Image 1: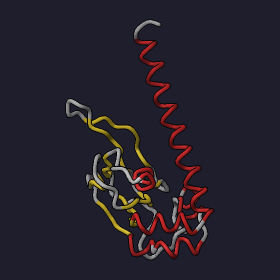
Image 2 (image 1 turned 90 degrees about the vertical axis):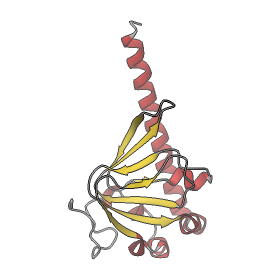
Image 3 (image 1 turned 30 degrees about the vertical axis):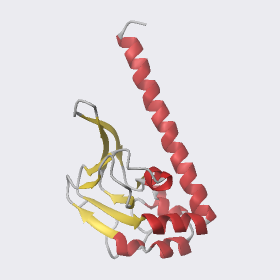
Image 4 (image 1 turned 60 degrees about the vertical axis):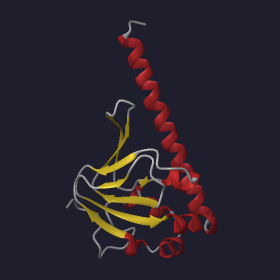
Length: 162
C-alpha cells in the first residue's frame, strides 16, 4: 500500500493533507461527515462507480490513483483523467442529482473515504466554508477540462495541417 492515510491516522496528518478537500473544511464538518467510518482500502481494478449510475456519494482519495473514463458509442473506453490523493470523486453528480458521468476505477491499491450523498449535501448546507471550497474545486476541474479540450482541438488542427 502506498504511504498515506492509514486507519489510525486522523484527517490532516496524512501525506495528501495539503491537497485534500477534508483539510480545507472546518473540523466540525469533518466530524459530522464521519470520515473514519467511511474508510476503505481497495485493490487495483476496483470500480468505485460506473458511468450512468445514480450517485450514492462521493469518494475522497487518500492514497493511490483512480482512473476516470467514459465509454464511447462504439464501446471503447476513453481515459479522461487520473485522480491523485486529495481529490474528490463524484461530487458533480452528487451536487446535480444526475447520474455519475464517468467510470472511476482504481489504477493502483488505494485508500479512500466514502461519504454518503445525504451526509455530503447536509455538510454543504450546514458549513458555508465547505460549500465555497467545493465550488472552487469544481471550478478548477472545469477549467482543467477546458484546457484538455483546447489541447485536443489544437492537436487536431496541427495534425490536419492548419
